[in-house]
Image (cartoon, rainbow, N blue to C red; front, side, top):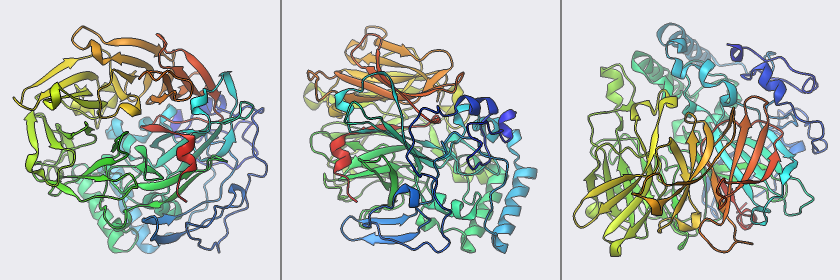
Length: 628
């Protein structure tokens, strides 16, 4: 219960401004920054100017010491970015510093906003109090290392063990994840948090320090709620449930009709993953368009450039798991939704230009299609037992998204360059619920598709009681001639968040690296599987645990293209690790070929990185080639 109350500031944080905290006093004290950390001079800015003027995207960013609130809608003809750019005054306070119980000054709410706020308060108090549903009670959901943190300006971090490999030099490891900007009024699901990017820029010189920067993705939702000083848009995954969901829907409609929000500007969080294509870095969340962001290759500063519709050719949303072909440079993606066509497939050329939509009308009902797979010639879509049923909230008093145990999962295979769905083929695969794909390729002269993916064995817990999820990694063979589908388990452990050498995507590969759920979504270690051992027992060939009370997130594989020998597994596995006992936070680099995934380098982080979702490593060349 201590996490429900504001934490007291310890001496290390006392001089800095403070805000309401979800962090327990013990965790806050343990995570205090080491005085030996070098900080940028003059990072305490003046208060935001009330008369801040707008600038265009092509203007050079202001130094972080001088940034003030800016809002500007732009539509540049050269980069097809339709954006809302907002930068805020930033402080040098570490992002895990306690947020004070002293209330911040909020803008005066309009009469319409005050009325809607009162209705929401009544719903959360009398109709759907979070205490009745522990799985969405903020006191539980936002505790320990799931608690949100403040933004962190570019801050040097010492290398405390080993040496950063040369193949990482000048690049940045960036992890995306949920980080609520405000204390939720009512129920809150982990998926409902605002997106925050935690970027570690690695130095090119051995005598320089890595630089950590944590910034919110400045989505439309984030901007509206930042300006209001409180939550405005509803929590989709936790708020729309039964009678309370209908009531919250009415409040949301009232906010739209009174001009408090405009859903056409975006409703997403950009909190799930990232992708690099067409000379840009994007923060992704499947309920909205991609948001272009930029990491400064010199300072490490992270900036939101804007929401992108690619010249008006992309609407509604895009998957958070697009697939970039390492040979052609093309990006393959899709969107899904509650209205027909429930799935739409499309692709981008290497320059980032979007191609034509391919609607998939053979999907008979809307399902939660989070990920897919591609081979050299095919795209594979899973239809799983998590479905969208908005009427279920009205008629059955349930949630608009939930598990349907009576549905038979299917896999749909379509040529990767199809102009329509005429060649789409659906195959029933009972009991196979794929949330994430790892890789897929073709064998037997193109007659067979082989796919590796974790199968969620307890699909009913995906949206509630996530700690009960168990994922079994399987190798799936699809015979395109006969239609037969066979499945082979590769390991008994609870494994998900699998990654491979990105240069092997869509082609046959041998090794995958997986997070070990302890329980999900907390990752207690990393396991390396050898796919060539399929059918011969457990395929785990290397494993590293992070120790008692130590948890990481999704691992990421970085190939050694500088000193490596060209083997598929010649490289490094990287991730952030948090020690719940000491509050210690580190960036860990592991040798991907070592039998125990030996740690070759560690960076001490000045602040906590909450548990999140997906990340990637952006090379020095990719950082330098980013469009402004």
